[in-house]
Length: 251
Picture 1: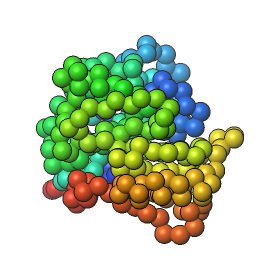
Picture 2 (picture 1 turned 90 degrees about the vertical axis):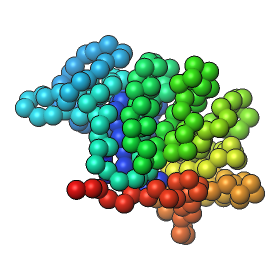
Picture 3 (picture 1 turned 135 degrees about the vertical axis):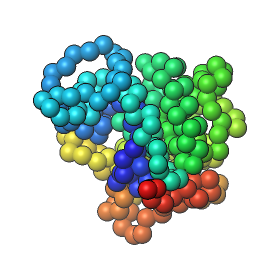
Picture 4 (picture 1 turned 45 degrees about the horizontal axis):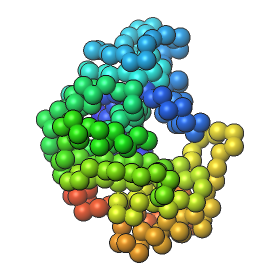
């Protein structure tokens, strides 16, 4: 578990890393490449680590680069921590179609062993939520929040399970988007130095704000929007997340 500059959570936790979506604007892939120990390690699509990998005498955070990897030794990272909002798998898509069900079940089990935290998940494959619910795997808990990103209204039928907390992430904002208006909505601009990087237009943001205000949906603007928004950012949380701000560590 690590402190983070992501402004809608207090910490990140990565028991699973790696992704196969191949998004051209992916920040996580570049981070994994920088901290892979400089090794050209080839591996299968899915790998498992039971203890930190040592490369050239140092621990390597991503010894398999950005290949999907379950780092079981990280399941206990929350020990001794007070309640906070935790972004789970900021360096992966835990619900990608390549991730085995048992990896997800083990992560959920670890979450339930530390119920003082709020856990926020995020995926580009939200249909997996319904599939996991049908299997009895998805956990409809008050402190577990299931996010989906860049799914535009009308682009496809998104069937989400009932009795769970959901939120929408419009990041990066690459074009005008009409969000799902019953869910807390996070908005952010593309970061990094990618050639062809998209700078969002203020009117795109204004439309999202107008839509969300119409349905009384809380909005959270990431700091990456400060320059284009040009005024104090709107940074709202749903009620269930307000009470779990980071309070520090025990001991």
